[in-house]
Length: 368
Figure 1 (cartoon, rainbow, N blue to C red):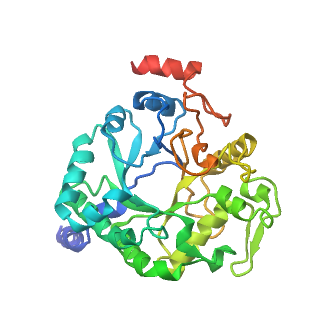
Figure 2 (figure 1 turned 90 degrees about the vertical axis):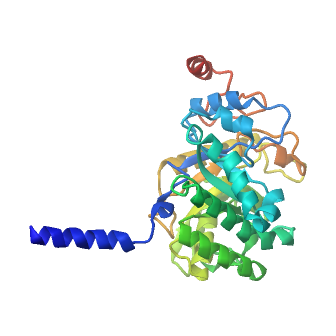
Figure 3 (figure 1 turned 45 degrees about the horizontal axis):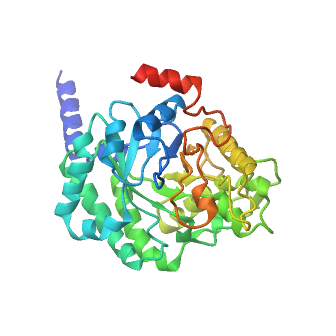
């Protein structure tokens, strides 16, 4: 009996001094497949119809780029797991004013929990490496203030804090093992990585083989970008072979993280996709290529495998995007990344059903 009491006392003391681990175990992504629900359009289905569409497709993980209340209400009670976005335009205010960060979290996250399963907040999007240098300096403060608000509200075991990066934060990404963070990014990236390591957040990467191929079609095999049969590439430093570009892009991020001292940080792909239409100089943006990329990506994610450099870290990715968005500026390709057309029908067949399908109609009747 005495031995048991000594053991119990030991366990109690051990747990007492153990750092809090709730924030280290929160996961904003279950499974391996998710989708980005962008809404820069005036002709896409209503949020209620989108819920029907996503549930019919069995897509559980969803990211949005704001915290629009009509969307949050539509997702209530659905079981879908939602990451909301704090837009770049709010970063400076959130960084400078902790009270405003608290108000934002209360109004846009806490008020909808637990009925709407908000499991993450993406603070800004593609800030570092972007053209607004003032936002570079504001990002960490905004991240910390949003996290502290979440923690004070006792939501840090439910809601994960992240920010997504583009390839613009990297230099020398070929071969993957040579990748590092750009010199002018490092001073902002390292404190951010240190904080995310403390709270258990992953490194979020927007990875587009489509854009990489378009930037250098002379030297990149399109089959390598599309997950098709190819000789791939060989990385002599790691003695690893890559048969598709997405794996190489992910491992380049892992190499940069390791070089920066964060070898254990997980990489999650927060955007990837392929445009189905483009301008004259975007010849790779075709329906056939978009179908091929997204079909093969879906198969690759379903295998629940890691990458050559991190075979135990199962690749997780949010597809960009749910819909073609007709109001997006820029090249034609920017408005044509959707798996679904504006009316909810499929843009091309990779195994999902659109809103006009019998299965979607049946689900809608069931939900009603």
